[in-house]
Length: 453
Image (cartoon, rainbow, N blue to C red):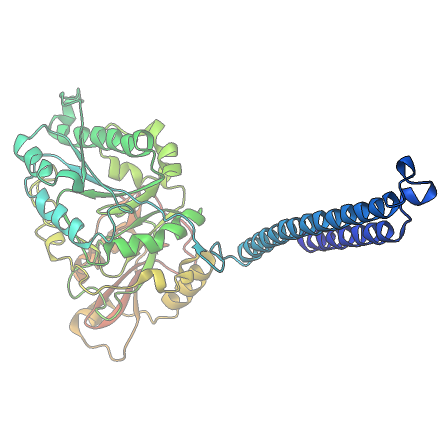
């Protein structure tokens, strides 16, 4: 279409020039009107003067036509230039490249803005969290930090306020106690946290009108490539309907349980990890109307919310929790969480090929990798008698056998709605004694049993 249009313009310019050339030729060849009769009042010099005057008029007309032609030619040239520019844009978009290059400049898509929402309450140690976020943040414009504070703790508020314009400080307005069932009186904190999350996420998506967010709690320290990690996963999360979040956390990411040479490795997981996670506004619009009164994270792990969707998680965690004290009273902290290995090596995720995370390809490779690994006894794994580089597989067939294997091998043994922590298709992957180990259900597994909890 563009080629046809440019050809028509060229033809039009040619016809314009040709028509005016013929007109000038006729004007020069035709006889002056004064030759057909006598000069005015019989003056013998009038005829020659009239002829000279008409020749002068023809020359003036010729100059006007030439000037008009030059103007028209310049106009047509500008139009052609614009057509070529738009043609280039169309062609590059067709080829999947939205950048438009011209002689004078380069037009690129507007950068994606991904805000960081820090959920805070009464920990003055939020400073450690904020210092690391600001230290590793590559751009204040692309990654605005919003700290949402509950609890009304003045000392914590002062710490947050000390950062001034480096962040936005918002305060949850409803600090009242929540009426809870008698059996849940000791869980009042969980109800308040759920209320705070609901309010804060509404602020991000509705009041600030952002389209995505990374949620961080006030007791998390982030890795140097935290922002790089989420920037690379944003377009994958945006385009893949089988995913509903990306997390910086590996539940079994303790020192010795991750492959130190595979800090680039990412996984799909059916378990909602939290602890530094990204979601899109579309998901919030789905979840917000039914947001729970308490225990929001376990609610997220229920099949009614997950809907067979997965998250992305890393081999080596990009967050580390330092908050032993909280509403969970240090559950899991002393045994597992304080030993989580935080990545220290910057990985340029935005420059890596992450297409292996696409579900069809990932599932094919994952199943082949797991079920081609030989089955071994747990006792042989613990004793170190196995030879070869691995990977190896240990098999479970009930919640009791899974828990026994997990405890003996040192990984987290709890199940939420039947899904093991860091699990995918029932399989938990970890590193042990320098080898990859899979705790896996039998071949042919096809669904989780929510009663396994």
